[in-house]
Length: 292
Image 1 (tube, rainbow, N blue to C red):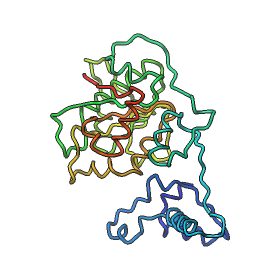
Image 2: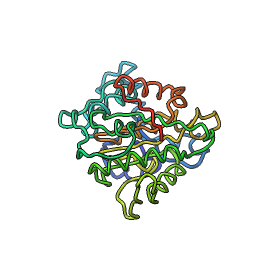
Image 3: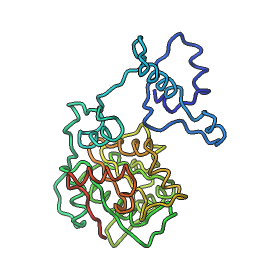
Image 4: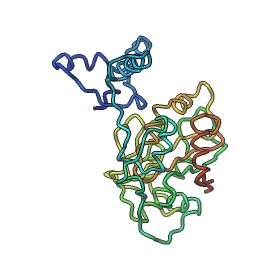
């Protein structure tokens, strides 16, 4: 399992003990982590799964007579159809389907009267499974890997969800870099009297982590903070993340019932994948401007 994350040297030792093997994975999600630039440039960042998949594709495209050795599982049992449909269109040639048992599942919570902003109240509504929360802060400059404005917005969303009975263990928060993960943690694990926020316990089961650490995980609600205030320049590491389809795919496919994407719409809309994400959200009227 997760064979697309295993390097060829790592897997050969096990495979030599078997007469047959089955690799299960997804080459459209994160590849193996290889820290050596030289090793990566010489092909060691490739997985055996991806390598054999390409060989099979080439063979079938050239008119090969034998049956394909690859089978695609087209039905997924995690995301509802509103979340699944976007990933299917963007990454899976519209071939990924939500199983009937999960296709129409939406978030359920207790009706309550609270004092959050109208934007937050709208963003968490069960009727909108995929939402883009547009957070703008021109004071935060390109080159930063964290955003206080987004961290505050994330805290407001979490507060509204908790007050409606959503359990901490059912909420996951993802960020591109550890700097924003630490920033969000700081906002959630300390009191904020003005908003009435009470710090989470150090033993809180809420997951707050990077995309790389979240692969394979899932939660009822995922909040994704991209930590952007303006379009990242060519030298900004954030740009590599935002233009990397495998990382974006992982980030957008962790939620079961509710996905809230937090970022600066004008900054992200210059990037092709985000143009399509924002267009998809606009088609559902779920791009929401957040003002503190």
